[in-house]
Amino acid sequence: MAQRPQHGLPVALTIAGSDSGGGAGIQADLLTFAAHGVFGTTAITCLTAQNPREVTGVEAVSPDFLLQQLDAVAVYFDLSVIKTGMLFNAELVDTVRAFAEERRDVPLVVDPVMVATSGAVLLEADAQAAMRRLIQLATVFTPNLDEAAVLLGWHPESPADMERAADELTASTGAAVLLKGGHLRGDDLVDLLAIPGGPRKAMRRERIHNINTHGSGCTLASAIAAELAKGPALEAAVEAALAYLEAAMRRPLEVAGEHFIAHGT
Image (cartoon, rainbow, N blue to C red; front, side, top):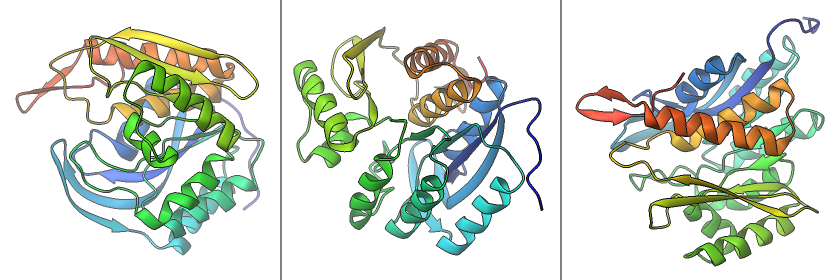
């Protein structure tokens, strides 16, 4: 089928796992895209059996079927942005990297999903090198401090460590990084945006208590992707995405006795 000319809404492609609990992964990405006025398409890497407290099972698709999904979307839609989430193993990461390599003109947002908040492993250890190669193609990648520690070989423990880590990650990958500081203690959160060849920018916000943060990383990365799909420069896209996440966390949904991020705020 010939590719159709693009009209109307920008199109975002999320390549990630499915969360049966509905709060993260593909489900969070599609909700976030819709809230930003962006049409969401998907390529599912894994089915997961999970809820906001635990992951009890993961079934990965084959690399061939992932590629079939990617090609089916790309042959029909003119993609405005690509966002990745849980990729799970080296074969799937390499499949995504080859797909992105052929589309270097499309912004790529990489959320290097490695370990769930519950402790479940979401990226196999032998896929870490493949993830680093994928990140080198990224417009921006969005590690939390635990993921940064895997990529760096040491764990940032302070704001000063975060500055050093952001600089090292940018230098080693050639990609912009939004290093998320939510795992540090304290009521004030600082996320650092470092862009190759440019200064670091600290983005400060107040910690919001008594909310289940399951899916917050997926939501932030997909919000950045949605903003990039509409055209803003990277710094503006990141600032708008952080504002969206903060607003969503300040107006939580109450479900099953817990407060969850309100997608679509």
